Length: 268
Length: 256
Image 1: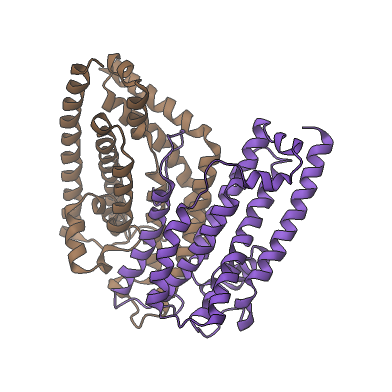
Image 2: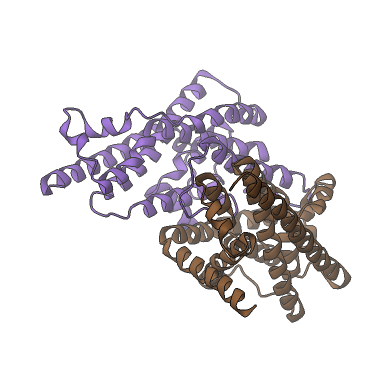
């Protein structure tokens, strides 16, 4: 058991080293982050200043800016594309070799993603530093909320990595996942609350977002951070995240069992 | 994750226009959603149709830029791989050669930009006259020249520095974020930089104020600024071209 764990940790470490080598990509991600939070702070400030209301949606400007910043931090943290490697492996046939290995492919991909995300975690340091320098990041609403946010963040990560893995596994059937990836990115931008907080959305859209995992990945941890979710609502939101993680993990297991069988039947 | 292809490893070629679409729709959504939120004000006093027009005008200029100057970005790769010299051995302007490599034109951006602009100008209620039509033509050409000059300058740097991809992507990233919002919402320093140093403001902001009959705001109040885009574009491109010639001469004299 410990030995298998060691193997997967090895994958994670290798992934971390691999991602760290893509220096240009890291630079672009950081500059993109810095530019976005710089620009969006003025967009939101403008929206708030020209509003007749001091706290639209019940949120004051400093909180809204923190929401925006943490949202961009999450985008940076979750930018790993490691699980998409299935598509490439299926295309060039390497998948056959991967299936012959005594390690589970989904788990090795999850370990890979963990390593890649560990690098993104390191990037959080300078990113947070920059936001603090600009004066647009407040600390979490309370110590309790800080803890709840950490839990929510872990759940959000697990949910999104399983979602990505799920989409990636459709490559076993369709060979191309670009359309689905794009759809997912659109949905994330529109329905996760990362650009426009969900409490500003029209009623109909709000209901749609509750049926999809994207809100559980972004809106929930962000809302906890700024203290918009309290007490029972907060626990309910966390519970919903757990449900999503469980559901998505179960789906991944199901799809994998179908995929593995299909690949074996087709002779690798 | 937000609107950026997160892939670090090389991936098979994908349809460019879909990538571009991803940049467009969320932007519009941002406007639509916020337009539906009565509690929130506006961005710099600009309404949703006006913001859409601002963006669509940029998209038009960018589309022309991509179609005309798209290949210039390949200079970096050519210099790095050592395949640039073939442009120097032929008796035709090297830049012209690079731009006209017969490997397909990138009209994807333009393909999306034209209908987008058609919708945007309609929503914004632009009252077209001959003058405005000419202004549009001049602005689009000028905008393409401004963006082209930036690409040309960065590509020229590749004669000296190997790792210039990062600079190009950096400039593109920064430009994309700043150009889609009215300049007036930014602090004076930023407004100054994007008017004088990197003239993004001439690409869409100043001209849009003219098309939309908006009262001038921010640091730069002269209405004539909106008509200067073709001039600014020509000046920028001339400077960039001189720099390119200089780089070319250095490259040829030192022997690749």
